[in-house]
Every structure is written in structure tokens, then in C-alpha cells.
Amino acid sequence: MKTHSLRHGGVIALLVCLLSAPLVAMAVDDPSEMLPDPAQEQRAEAIGSQLRCLVCQNESIEDSSADLARDLRHVVREHVARGESNRQIMDWMVNRYGNFIRLRPPLTVGTLLLWIMPLLALCIGIGVAWWTFRRPRTVTPTPLTDEERRRLSDLTETR
Image 1 (cartoon, rainbow, N blue to C red):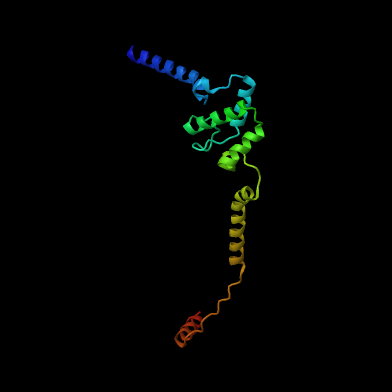
Image 2: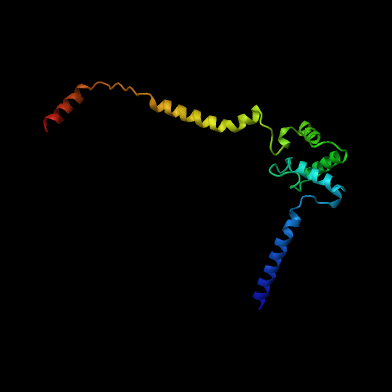
């Protein structure tokens, strides 16, 4: 009977974890962090979803629970509450943290090089390998010694 109740308890614990996972996944830790105006809060979330968490680096500040992400969410909400446009808020963030803060940075020469460099390195490697193996190898044979000539002659005569 004990194994049956333990198995039942494990299933219940799993169900509780699965049902509470969406609540845990919400990054806004404190409801007081949210703006009272739903339209402003929605704008703040949209802006925050475009900004990279500088700690996690693979999540937006809206998805991260890092302290720095919480601070950045607060800054975004302050700017939204002041009535700044999305563009002004993004410009402020980029001026402060650089383009790295954007989850989708703009296409610049730097980002283009970042994407092209692996392909360029592969092409250079293939080109060097092709050029190396394409060159004819001219090997000048060393002349046979007298001993080698005699031995060759003996070997060819016996046949």
C-alpha cells in the first residue's frame, strides 16, 4: 500500500508543478512593478520583450528574473509613464548599453561582418586547399647509383 500512496503523491506533485509552471514563468516578480494603466503596461512589455537581459543574454528583460532585468523593466516603465515614445526609450537604452541590449540589433557593417566571417573563413580555407592540391608536384628523381643500376639490371634479366 505504501508504494501506491507514494506513487499517487508523486503524480500529484508533478501535476502541481505543471499547473503552476506558467505562473512561475512570468518574469514580473512583483505586481507593484506593473503600471496601473493597462495600455502603458502593454507598451512597456512590448518594449521589454525587444531588450536583451544583460545577465542571461538569451532572454528578454520581460522573461528574465535577474535583478538587472528587474531594474531595466523598472526603467522602461518609468520612461513609458513619462510619456516617452517607444523610439525614445529604445534610443535611451542603446545610448546607455549599446546595440547589444537589442535582441534584434540593426543590420550594420559590424553585424554583417559577424554573420559573413564564418562563410568567408570557410571559402578561404577551401581556396587554400584547392590551390595547394592543384599545383603539380614536380619531383626530380635522384639518379640511380651504380649499385642500383646493377641490381636493376639483374632483376630485369631474370625474368
